[in-house]
Image (tube, rainbow, N blue to C red; front, side, top):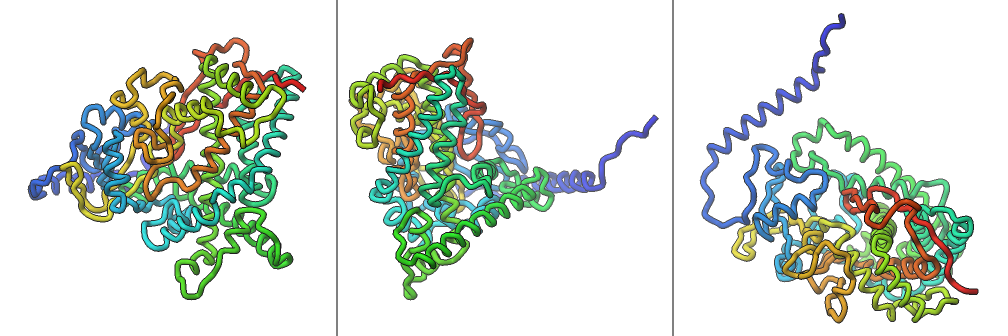
Length: 509
């Protein structure tokens, strides 16, 4: 008989180290002096060492929503060694994102942002300060202006027309279409052409690299909350981060070099894509902030921000809209009726039609209420001690805004909060651009999404075009009530499984 397996020496060392650390923290908790009387937000009892990490589970936005029902819209948690505040109501969100926005305008540093964002450069994960303000100005005044969004209109139209022709072939053959794949491809091609001036490049798996990046940035990394565990890499994150970081850098370096070579040959070349504009940013030797843009790693970090934000976010929203329309045929028919009346049965949808499609706006809003792209807004961190609503919040506290919970607040959304009912926005002034805190899928304040306009146009155009050109049904044998709506948690919250549907072409010649 074989001898029993014994734990490895590394495991024994780790177990002994963990036991020693836990015992020490328990001892220190008894020796800790009493608080100075400042009132902290309420929260559940914490465990030694891990705090409340055990309460997050596989879908943290749902777990935090349940806890907020018990402890209130401003709730205190201890995530390992990181103090955190969870915000779960529109009123509380306004306090943190508007009234005291400047105090919470910075980002916490994580292992993923350090590895994948060139030391938290770029705009999304950089700390609040002069450099971030210039990055924000660069995006809003040069890269993502209304004129730039308009400049790329022909690209969006061409890519959608190709997608329609491809789906027409499947419809004629009565084939089930992988909607997840089709929507992913059209958004991917739009993004490549707008950002890089090219179609998909077989040399790089850009989509795979971006998805792995978002997965790592949004994953639960215990080393971020218990830093003493980082050398052990017990989840294998460091190896994945190193591999993904190398792939990102090789891809972006090649793309930048090719654009630089093209600019050197054609110095008077007009701006054809975002990369050209970024490389042509004015450089003033008296302006240190602008000089930073010319730093290689900063250019790469900004470009990665833009590609990642343009690609998977739009795909995620489109697929949730599609899912809700398939699950609610009444809503789909009403949307198609609006399209038929305003666009005509023989015409493709054009972007100039979008402002008139009021029911489409309501469908998008209702989808983002129930399925915000990022259910927990990217965390912020406080830069000083502050008292909000009578609660003391210490410096370096992490702030998590649960927009998924806000979208289900029964005090705001009076009717059945889980029901998909776009008509709740009829004659409503509620907007989703960050000023109405009951609906903030793109965030608000200084850290609101600067690419919101481009994202909304892309989502609306894809949905309008595909719903106008085709009637859609679920595959035979699947009823709307049976449609799988399982979520997959990460930085974004996409569908866990692929969406399949049966199209039939319905435009007249």
